[in-house]
Image 1 (cartoon, rainbow, N blue to C red):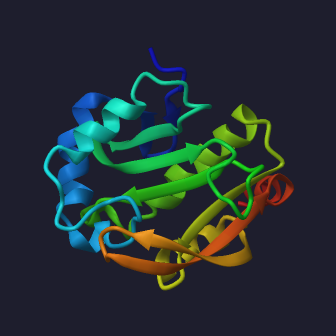
Image 2: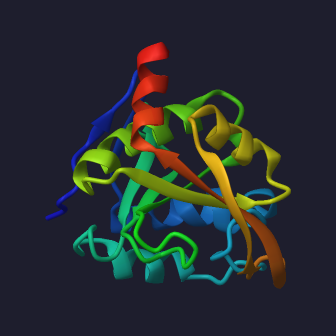
Image 3: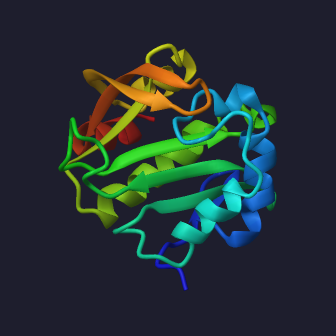
Length: 189
């Protein structure tokens, strides 16, 4: 039984990921280079069974020890993932939980990512009792960086991560969001 709640937004339901999400993850991210290229963990070409293996490592585990992984659904259809990893994921900000997310290409550009990420952040600030949350994005992933900026994240430092899909080290911008800035932004909206 998952310890994660279901989060509802205006158009979306974020629910704990399930083993049955493997095919959707493979189809939307694993087999679409335009999604996989922005993620450090996906190989290219996609390795069959990778999504199943990954889900078996997180489904049913303590989300405060592994990661809180939410399936983003629109009308019951799986469209992407938003995750919050416990403190320790980022060497640069080891005391903070770390946010990550992706959407299938057909679902990008409709505001779903912002909606899902905002809901996950609101949950994470409470669940982790955090004063700030970190994230990182490839330096040239302008869409993701813009979304994080709109939510109130501020640049913290540059780092490098190995991208399996690109088979090289990639410059990443590490950002942090203060809880007070997040709450002020939500009140203003």
